Length: 146
Length: 254
Image (cartoon, rainbow over all chains, first blue to last red; front, side, top):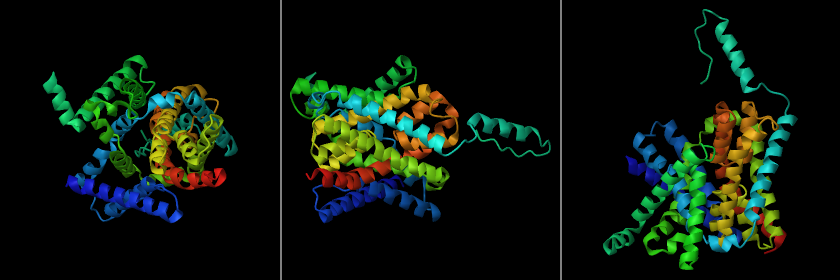
């Protein structure tokens, strides 16, 4: 049933947000501490548990996935109701923070790549797999992945 | 005409669905024909959303963008905290823990760095622009992580709407630069193998930015980058309004 997916999602979200609020009270801040993240962990755990028991029905999946596929439109609606007029007065903060974080992250990708040594490129992997396919004439097993 | 506006205001949530849907169609068309698919339709839609909020704010003099227009009040409900949290949590359903193991330690390191490094950078930029309170600094720093982590964090710790708008805009801008810039720097940063694609996904985060950027570089790398990027939002929503916020609160003392 579709409603079981929507209900599961609701329960996970409510539990997560409640725990986030609780954590805020315990830690003495007026904030929801990581509630959405906690709710996501609940949902991942629930999915694993249901899958292991073979209870992951089509309807249940539909109920959750519908809302998952709805998140970009919801983010668009969220963007459309912000106080952008006041934000524009903040100046070029958006451009500097955006460009800066991308530049730093590009550099980190290069750095991690260099530090962890050379690896086969995707061209080399495909060339090797193509060779392996050609060589054993009797071996009909395809090792190629799309 | 009067009857039409009555129907729209009496069914505000449905009006919002229709309005956002039309906006997404337009964005899809802009993405396809004006940018030749380079910039993802979702990023264009969010930018158009912010632009409409700007004009809505000027037209009404209010603080809630287009939601201050009576016919579009439903946008406030659709993009409000309740449905937003609901939909974002739902995206975790597609996360496959078994696949996550493939990314291994290097993916985890990239994810950690991809959350903390942009956050710190965002905080410093916000400091340079005169923000001093921990709530605004955290929200803008979280926006530099992704455009989802920013507003989720801002709403959780009680940031003001202009600051949340700044954090969304920062995240969207970041996603757009990743989409456009990746093919140009791909060679320089060694983006030609599955492992570096996974590191890239973990560091950059935004799924739309990563999949768009990798698709323009080498289509075969997309699944590897998306694999780590899908964890980025969850991790950010978990640590930004908690560990990172508390660290900043302790440092700034406010």
